[in-house]
Image (cartoon, protein in one colour):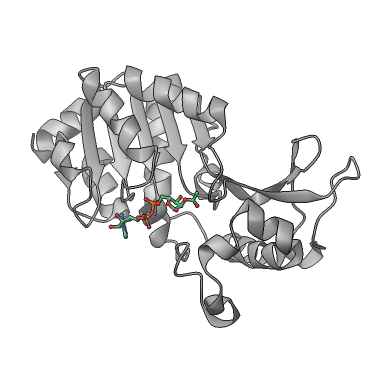
Length: 245
Ligand code: OAD
């Protein structure tokens, strides 16, 4: 398949499923998980900050780190890649399903999930927290007003609302994504290395059902060989080429 055929397939598709990863937020200047380990934090491994064990041992340090990442994402802005995907939802309405592995909340800020389609944050987000007793999630106050660890309106301690090393993805989010990818005429896989479950599994589900899978990534990935078409470009340029007028 070439770019023209990929554009045609996308524009004709009634159901489109999209999976995004860290590459989509790279152009917003969000440090990836590992790049965020600078300065004071360089002596911590990600596993020492983002795991249930780390939180049990030292909740204050874990919250301090998440508060810093939360501050970073509030300073960042959605980039053209986020806006292209929100625009695609305006075209497809309920036929658009967007699953992201990113926890920065930038797809929601670009308007995804508000034009009739669905946005699922597979790994949670940094801008809310979860009541440790009831499991309910609540928005966090602005980082300047955030006292850690935050306490929920129910009076219980809250934990970051993200999926940690050694934890499972929320079952309902994963099931919704699997169903959407199985039903998709076209799946888009943008800015993800495809090494971490469920990225690989979702795209392969679309292929198994006879759909088209298009990858946008400046580098070849574990998934590239299986793709119907791979666009070797950044998320913003690649999506402009696929979706632009
Ligand atoms: P990775 O850091 O594994 O991969 C980022 C991908 O983005 C790579 O394939 C890059 O080539 C690509 N990339 C870089 N710049 C880009 C750009 N401007 N446009 C498009 N693509 C670009 O990130 P993810 O695949 O998101 O999990 O990783 C998935 C999960 O693994 C993360 O959510 C995290 C991590 O462990 C948890 O925190 C649970």
